[in-house]
Length: 415
Image (cartoon, rainbow, N blue to C red; front, side):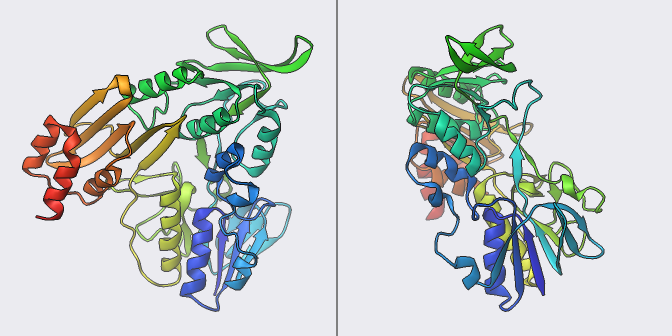
């Protein structure tokens, strides 16, 4: 049996390791598209802050780890699939045969249609090569423009602030972290950043980037739709990500926002599975979504590998959850925090201390929550949501005072 995994991120690595332990003696090939060993993209900002070095991003740090498990790591980029012949077609020529295949190609940064984003000094913060370029330009006192204040953008923001740059953040939507925070929380995060000396422009778009001589120094000039211009040594683009699925065109594999998978993480083509940021799989609420977060990726990889090896294991569905540190302000969101038809919401706000808690209920079940400025009882929130706990009379108590979440949890955990 030859298992091939396209993609050497967290989903791919966990899948390869699970296959090695589950089907001993099988041939396992892990295809990675970069020269660096398999690494975590989410660790790159910690390189920029100096907490870890480049090697600290590697998913497995022991020398010979993959060889010891019988996993062959091969550098290569998939440009297509021959699903009838069961072959991965590689960029630059060559192919990789398989008996069963896992697609874990992840995602890539979106490049907005803005003139000038190909200029030197404009970078994403997605690969270790990006990291190396940013390290050279984001020196103390450098002027930096960050395009995007979403989840990934705010992680990068934290790293840039630690490097002592003079930072301007430009976000096209009306608040920071708009897909994770409501207007109240997003507005508070902006206020927090402004107090930290960060210039934050929400509801604003970059229209053009040019290279100009500014006071005898070659700098980038960033034009905004407000008519303002910002001079910068570095522009970092963090405008979201999109799944790497284009190479599947013509294969018959069903794709939407990502690769559509069933509860066993198998695609519409038998013997081909998908996991991680490229997979549109079952979610906790009963739908099918791409949840581009590392806990979902690693669990996808494990479950997919078990099913590939013949150990039938249904996936219970991913819970959308995020924990973010924005210049020292912690924010979290779990599940259906936005609510909608048939839901009720309770919130408590202490804007002066940057504290906020919002709970969303469907009937007497907590279905979503978000918080700002607190780290206590976050596991309790997640547990109540994931366990679909029927709160009974405690629902009313939490509607009156959302702070009583621990009391509600204890009341049901030991009932």
